Length: 378
Image (cartoon, rainbow, N blue to C red; front, side, top):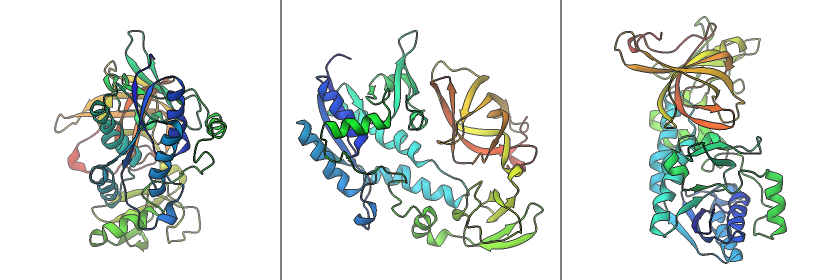
């Protein structure tokens, strides 16, 4: 890429700091930007975490070290509206959300491009471990990062060619170790700081507590039942459960038990065996695929960020009663713990084709939780 003005999203972490340093070294006119997304009640509890209060200060220190301007923009309301509120709602509705996808889709990338325009930058750079590669026609396409253990292409699956043409991912061909070593060699502020493992806005790591404090009046206690529907216990709210959960169930069945179903309408949590978790197919909504993708589609599909992926056929069917189009993913082999609220992302080799949100999973052992009035899946 020829030298140009590039806006770099700087979180104060090692990855975005090295991304900025690389662009400066390449001769670009770099502008650092930090989005203020969240306020923390206990700053000491979140030190070293993505978006923590001290990270804004660290980002400015890195910018000063590199000799580039740095700006902070307040996007707390946007973050609350597009990430926090939907996160709370999803858990109350028995779904397991993917807030990092929502954040990149509606806050970070989509907000940074207009900011780049305001600051006269032609491109936006982030510290994501993913790559932008042109196809045979020269259109920008998203690919996995070189470091498969750190690959973050899953979280950027919604970006279209026009957006990707303006996105720069300096770490796409690097490993995490290489980035850490480079940060130390360049003596970047915060080069040895820890890596965030939990959600930036849940300092304790307890998602159920976070939801409960923001939705106390909406919590509903309900029954816990076994695979045959027999009452085996009770709970204080479905927000404390996710598909595939084994620990913290509050019941003992004398054998390993897993959450295999959550019905928010009746506040019922259903337990079952390991086999009950495996799904042969999933129903998807809100598809966001590249402009050259057509259905039916054969692809490797990841049903969560840390899923290796399974071969699947993505096809459009019609609801038997309403005639509405339904996007289905049918897996070549059963997939464990396919959870409503998560995103199914399709890959063709290294390339990301797009994705859609999971609303239901189906299988021979696993009972579908779709309401009868929603129609029959072909």
